[in-house]
Length: 185
Image 1 (cartoon, rainbow, N blue to C red):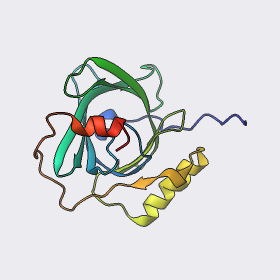
Image 2 (cartoon, rainbow, N blue to C red):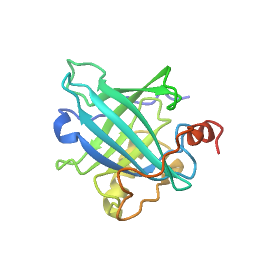
Image 3 (tube, rainbow, N blue to C red):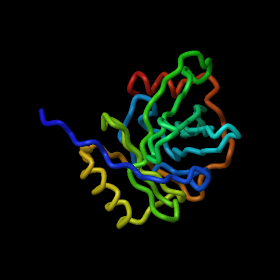
Image 4 (cartoon, one colour):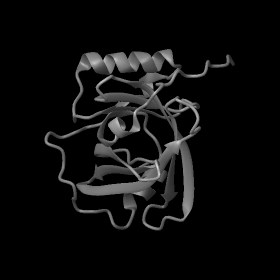
């Protein structure tokens, strides 16, 4: 098997500008998200200590599922946009820490859309500040992912409504979405 080259990541990420809400336009299916999730989004808030509060939300069968975590620079002395994210699972009884890579592979100069991946190339996200993205931009990001060694055939577009759901919706308080996602349902 040929060794894949190290992915190129964004340099000089301005974390303050990156904060706020991002809508998932497409992603690789993962066991951490429900199969039929819609209106999936992430909200990032800068903490006083320089870490980032992460709120990931998705709607499944009309109920809001969410998980909260934190992100931090993998190497505080590097200007590369390589972050670590940490969540505690299961979300309804957070006891087990799960840490992953969050690499910003592409970001426009206005911080309106981003391509996020990680070194194993098992996970990929296309994010946008709006619920929908122009096809031309989407295709450019897909092409960038392909150049970085991703199998873009696995990309799945995430349904988004316009306008997006309210801040709070009926909650999945039992963590059923989490169990369904782990079981591949």
